[in-house]
Length: 137
Image 1: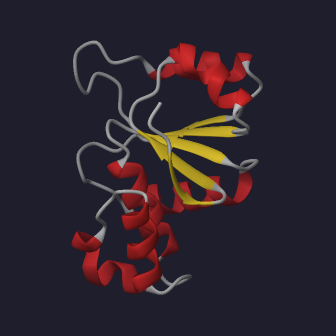
Image 2: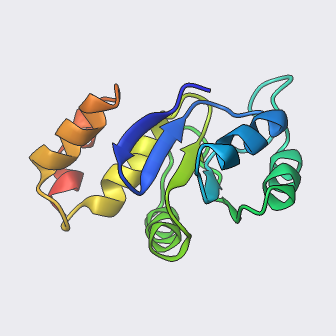
């Protein structure tokens, strides 16, 4: 797993596999958020298989599927609520980690300075600058 830290409570990764969930739990992750829709590409693990692995490992699992870059205000609100309600640290994933990072960035708009959001994402290897004014809150 290529796990990167956005902040203490949230770490992001490209697609994880069901068999990697016990390792994530052993590394101290206490919940998982999936932002990847099923059937995005051939051969990807199904959400329910990862959910089952998470539940078997005692980890809460939240699925907020995002197709492409189409993040609605409702998606952002659900992600923000999950960050507030789930036990931490949380492991979030999508195909590459970018959608999860964008959701996190948008959920932080108005709570952190835009420059801080951009810097935290960049430190994890993600560029959220295309979100521009949306990060101002």
